[in-house]
Image 1 (tube, rainbow, N blue to C red):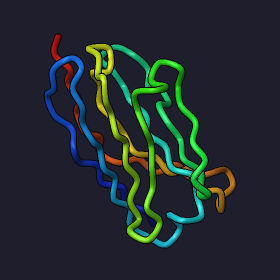
Image 2: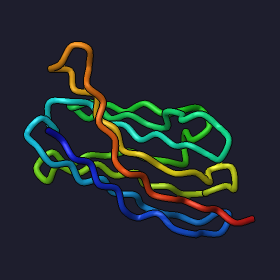
Image 3: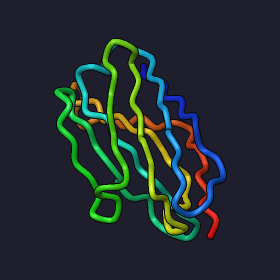
Image 4: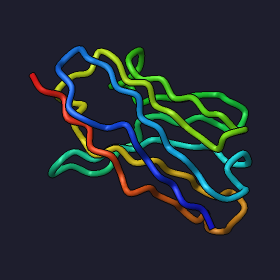
Length: 119
């Protein structure tokens, strides 16, 4: 069983920065890629960034160059450093783990953390 707990959201002005953190319990963290998703009001949840277990990263086009995902396998933590924030980044941000050891892959989600960017 995996539990994911996000923190670090808040209210920030356009151009500001935030750092989101996700703490993972369980022993499968280091075996799996980790992702951040976000969901804005009235919109579908979208993938923002992924970091593989080896540290390779991938980003949505809308956030490239502004958001950076990292992980610390020793601490079971994944982070999302957000800079040059825009109002359209306003959303609830969710930490995600899709367990490659299950078929179909079991999906784990945190409770989400609100990020609000004021104009």
